[in-house]
Image (cartoon, rainbow over all chains, first blue to last red; front, side, top):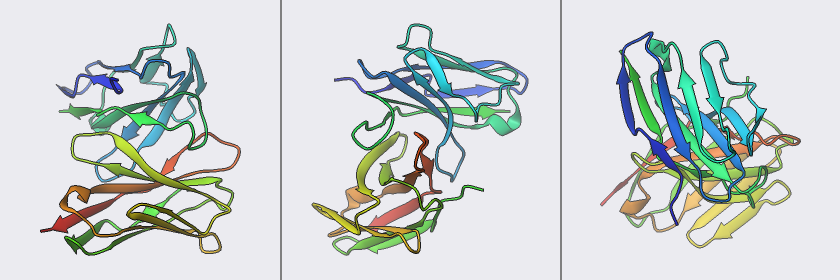
Length: 116
Length: 111
């Protein structure tokens, strides 16, 4: 069974350019998460989806970040315009449902973004 | 602020035991977790403990929980080179689905 797929794996852009990351969760997983992981830090939640609904986007900087999960399956995270401080790894995770260890989150390998 | 703290580095010899420590923030957290992250990969759930437990053993892994001090530890017995990775603890405050991750401890196992 395929795990969580993310693309691209690496992205280098100049500041003020737009960038988009794509995530394909594990089949059947209703809950999808986007995390930001800065160097030497743990992941921080950006947004959580239940099917196509964003149920927790309180940590998403909405002035420049947006996300969508139109059909409740794949998801896209976009940054426009990118800033130097956005350089980080963007992780996608999915789970059958939200909450508790019985709904284990499975993580993708992440997209490493470098903003020059 | 919400800061789950871990020491940055740990180095052990192959075959020895490793103990990774974590201080979490929210005494209401229902579950506490340990995740492993290998280079270039996402996080993988290793084990978890329910907040009403003091200890949980899972093969080579032993989790100890001290709720009074909000201290969590992960002991890896007979540490192998394949255990070299970054280990994150995480908590989920009661009433939320939010995972708060620690800063991570990089474990290096010397052959």
